[in-house]
Image 1 (cartoon, rainbow, N blue to C red):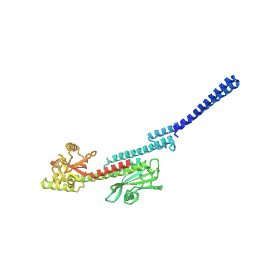
Image 2: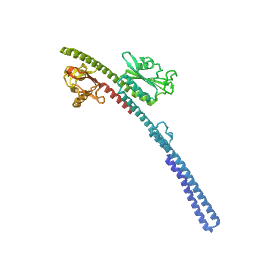
Image 3: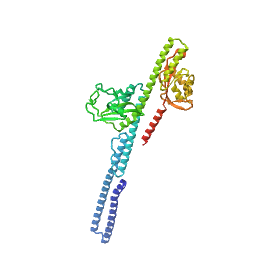
Image 4: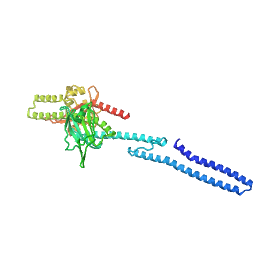
Length: 460
């Protein structure tokens, strides 16, 4: 029976009883009055009538009191739980999901309402946790985009990550393929009194073992002399250490190690699962850019030396051909498409990789305007952008906030990344620009697949 029906029954029963009792008493009074008239209005009849009326008044008063008492009890049984559930709803709306919802074990409407509120609370807490993970990961990855060196990348990563994990110490290790070791390029909160290794081989220590197994490794129940997390007010030993690998297509890029005073909760574990692949992707992009910039720097240095030699030597055609062959030898070794474009936008040099990317023979590209490689919808404004670069020529990435596309000979388009680096002027030839071009089709597909997988996981 529902609360509303119970309340109606509790209030109706005494009222019906009172009504029935009053009707019976009035019938009795009527009979007594009739008997009195037949008996000549005796004193005995009058006394019985007064007694019956007093009983009727007493019964009515008792019924009213009983009805009021039952109404008060029913009021408390309904209103108090509703007020408690209202406070729970306000608490959830304020973002506090730590308090439990009362009356969830009840079998009546109050219990059903409380269980519904509990379900809504859990759903809101889950959505709030997801929003926190997404926003935190997005903000940190945004910070990493501006890093120009591995050391700066490591510092930005740890400075953003450790506060999100409620503090502790951390180390960032980058894997060097040449030496086969993980070198520490950044740390957070690590005391100078801690004598820890700056590099690990595969399988050495927790960092090396994490790199070898390519999966997160955790240490708990640490001894008191394992490590001290030091502040200005004191120091204490951590209780939880986690080493997380940075992987790109199962290729090892590095390891992030954290030590904290507490094990990670579900929200922090979700943040790490969301963040580590994105950090690995950003690190891979930075390493490729650094290698490209290094190659461009070598090219610029060689160009400077050649320009000095050209000033000292005669301007014979033979020496110019030698210079051109040298440039070609350097460009042909580059893993990316590299070309040299003059101030008017005419291609002067192009390596074999450009031929693979765009489908034009390298010899056919030389002497052509660079706009032949630009999609038709972007081509009208390309000359203006080129002039803007020449007004303040500095080495930089082209259009970091835009999706750049290249145009192949067959008319198809593909996503690319472009790096620009001004070259020293040589004699009367004017200023030239070294252009690096990388096909990022595969990476875009991976990002698309990752987003699709995340969307499916969130929908599940």
